[in-house]
Image (cartoon, rainbow, N blue to C red; front, side):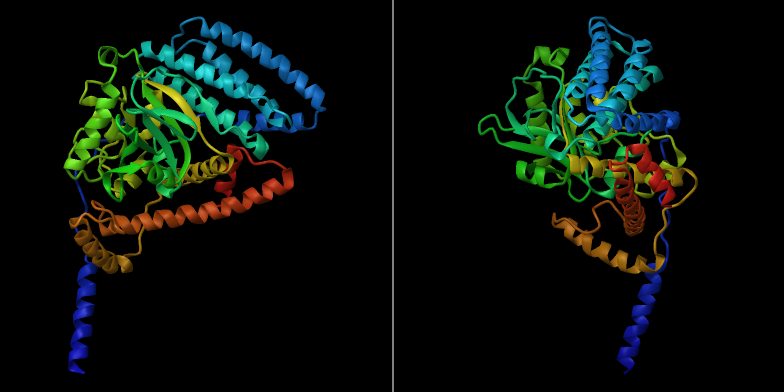
Length: 484
């Protein structure tokens, strides 16, 4: 009986000791001092939805005739646009953007849609990428113009896609057939060469945070660098995982890891470094492929791309190409909102002048080769983004990431076991580099996200039942706000 009592006393004492908070990480935070981009066009979005509703009531022949007239006018505008170099402050970008927004509402209402809108968007973004080679991408006007066109017009095409019948949905979009002499394979129907950078969006809650927690909220949360063996043509994907650090996946493993969307970026063939050495992309991919097999590279929660002793996903590609003289992310990604900074710092981030996956799309050194999504995962992406945008709003209003302090002793015991697993090179429940408190805060974040998403999804089902179409993004945000 005494032994049992002693056991419980020791157990309680251990529990109380494990409840003692450790000193909080007070390492220096490197903040950005920019202004986050905001659209501030809610009136326009709802007027476009009204145009869509009115167009659905039109006779099909009348609607088709109107769309044909407007597409012709847009094509004339685009032909002039493609034949002239434009600076980022050229008013033609605004004309194209607004004209495309307006016609998109009508196309979305058509029962039988052509693929004109995708071809138009791809021509516009290809031309913008060509012009941006001569822009100062560190300037606000260049960043804003690139974002409005590349992200804004893509969001518009996706609203059309989501109003398309399942059997008419266009998953694959080819943009630029950038030359490359390196080995290639097909991924999601897109020819991918060794040295290409693969942007993707994961299905986890933190993926939504990575995509949206940026001064320029985007669609992508992860970057992988593909290496293709020149003798066997076997593809390998070099990527940094929170759970494993930098690791190599085969094609099946890469595709098995849920992807809500996917984009292929390729270094321009006319870059001086590649012109003088066309095999450079292969050599860069081989370099990081070999290096991560010769040393353990843990995941970099701090997001410090200057220190290669640990790496986050963006750093894998930038590190490989920097070794051969190509600096990717011509401009630093910035995270300036205090709420986002506070939440990310709770997850271990110290560097808010960094390299975010979504911003890679705007780098003029890279061409957009192609993009893939399907209807189910695309709508999932939109719901997740809307939920995350609302949670970010709460963060910016002062909401903190909480955790259950009474679960801390158990979390610390689990972390101790995980430390042993990591020492033997195994994955663990709490990743290497993440402490017990951070793990509990992550659980809190996931719970908040899932609860809000569940309520928002219920409203989505009611919206579809009442109105007969999928809610556009601005409606999703409104539903999430009402669900708080």
